[in-house]
Picture 1 (tube, protein in one colour):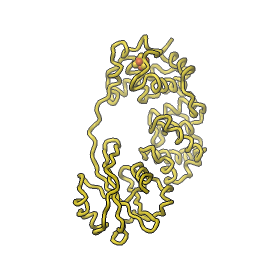
Picture 2 (cartoon, protein in one colour; picture 1 turned 120 degrees about the vertical axis):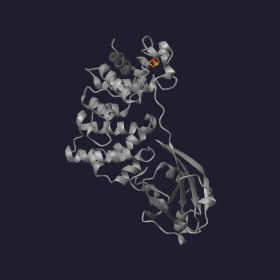
Picture 3 (cartoon, helix red, strand yellow; picture 1 turned 60 degrees about the vertical axis):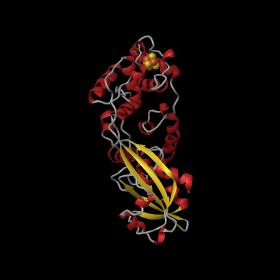
Picture 4 (cartoon, helix red, strand yellow; picture 1 turned 135 degrees about the vertical axis):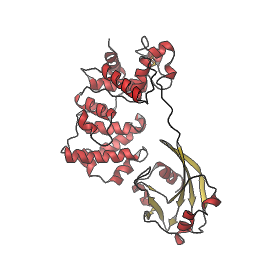
Length: 347
Ligand code: SF4
């Protein structure tokens, strides 16, 4: 039996029954694919249901305001993906009369849709013969065929893409794509793969050569930059001061507390003598809240500290992006994880 037919036969008896696999609607598939790039299936499911419920059609998604989209996305991280989804929905309404495209090339032209997502949507919805290549597929192919080329290099991507395209079932590309990803997620897992029960155990090069734990090969990413975020919690008569981030940095346009970023880790004494602190808060009393929280993003580590300023409202020089909100209305603002976790714990 061919590689593809083995996988399809395995999938028909062992594959997971997930809600987005029952549809050929490209809009619903797109929602599920973008959400699942962020998270594992169990964590992604509630987000999938929330988006489908709030925006049953792409027209409703396009008509939503961005704050609402970001609020529903809250907790998934990589907020630029949510923004790109929103832009893509608007383009579908304007340029495709609200009919979500199924064609690979049309899909690629939408913001946030790369080769993987375009291959997934076009193969699942209309059976276009485009092989998906995600982390699961890289792993399965690297191991079964014993390929030591690093997957995060131009050469690796080309090689694996060509192999994936060679192997795809031309008669049932959609099911094949589901099958290889599911197989990678549940059998040929990153750690502790189920080699003993595997359909490829008789032919898997990595198993034969004892290199399962070494494949796939990935080159080390470049060193991350450290950033130090000092947040100030300022309350005034049941209201809390929130700041909207700019559009150029991480967490673009999301809400957080007034922030002073420093290049290095400063002691509190040093922090309150910085020019930025003096300008904004004068000599307001400051009380630390909790310790340092480390938040890892791609290529940056954020070290956040929170401080309460109990009587800063009198000495404050408010920036244009700072506004008071009622405490009970904070739920309605799109906030990044550092801030909503802090609010859950302390406010
Ligand atoms: S034998 Fe093990 S390493 Fe090889 S494909 Fe199967 S699960 Fe993956």
